[in-house]
Image 1 (cartoon, rainbow, N blue to C red):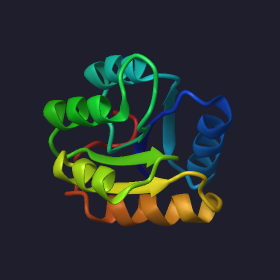
Image 2 (cartoon, helix red, strand yellow):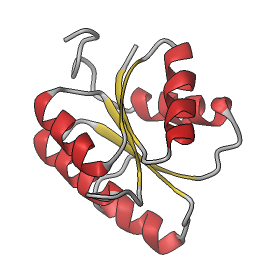
Image 3 (tube, rainbow, N blue to C red):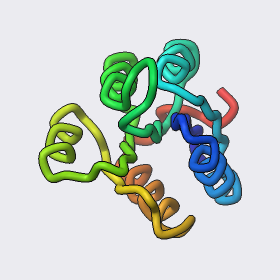
Image 4 (cartoon, helix red, strand yellow):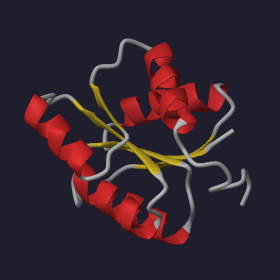
Length: 130
């Protein structure tokens, strides 16, 4: 399965994302703000980053830019409660793989989005446990 970084400043959402992904067999590392996510990204490889757009320290677009600059093949899903066509377009232009609006309908919506994005990932980027 995939190695996934989850970055969200809301503990309940972070826990929901982590639990849903871990139950699907993924290795999940969680961070509580954008700066922490960037520090982790600089130290460790991931197949996928799921980040909230609005966070203290550094926002989701900063996390996206860092992830894509360090490892261009990494997939990034942005989450936000402030869904807009303009924001989704900007996120895609910056390299986001997907854009999900909060609140998610449940674990199935998250898992479908993650599997869809990971299916587009070039093979062999990050081996589990590496």
